[in-house]
Length: 245
Image (tube, rainbow, N blue to C red; front, side, top):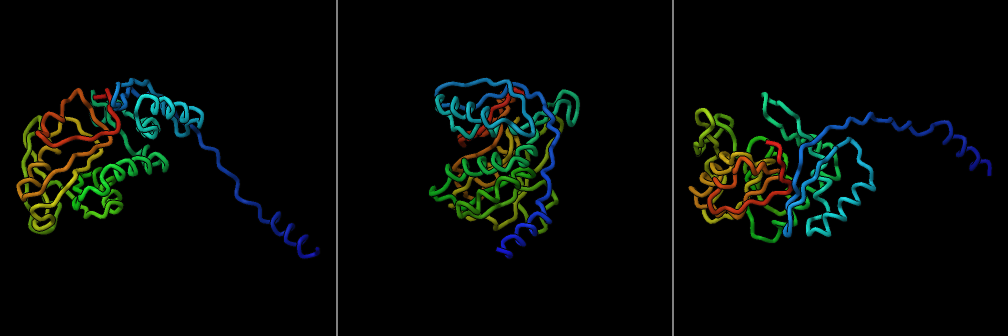
């Protein structure tokens, strides 16, 4: 009995650290449409650092009834939009808030892994820079290698490059020579498709060395910019469609 009492007092002497309360900052998000097989749903979303569990469950139930993956609403609500960044008129899609939400981040990776596992994919090509965030965990989970597609003069070895057009001028995307082999099956990963120029260049670059493009995959699409029209016959899979462009 004495040892039990002593243990009890010992526990009281070292109480667990207090839980720190976080100040919740809400941000207005422009209308976000979630992809659906039967219909397109427009949601005016307020995202906070913490969302009530009841709201998440209600959104998931509505998504399930609409034929959507019930994980998509939480992923959508975890992405914030920053107006006039990096210049006036641009609505920046900030995925760093998604990365802070461990459940939403895990769901994002899981959806891609579930889609691409057991499909004979040996290459996950990630487009610089945010494709480097989502690509490696997907590659590890499906047993594929990760190939970074980088901006010029970033890779140290011998490279093969592909040029693409910008609004004013041109740019290039590069890959190490020997990173892929003819006949391999690849998916190309990025966080967002806007005008589609970078993804289209990545497709051309891989196809030049004989790689089969199974699909391009992005977390977000800005459909008003019609980027998917530049991808040719390559399929595009996205999780969230945003009106903010």
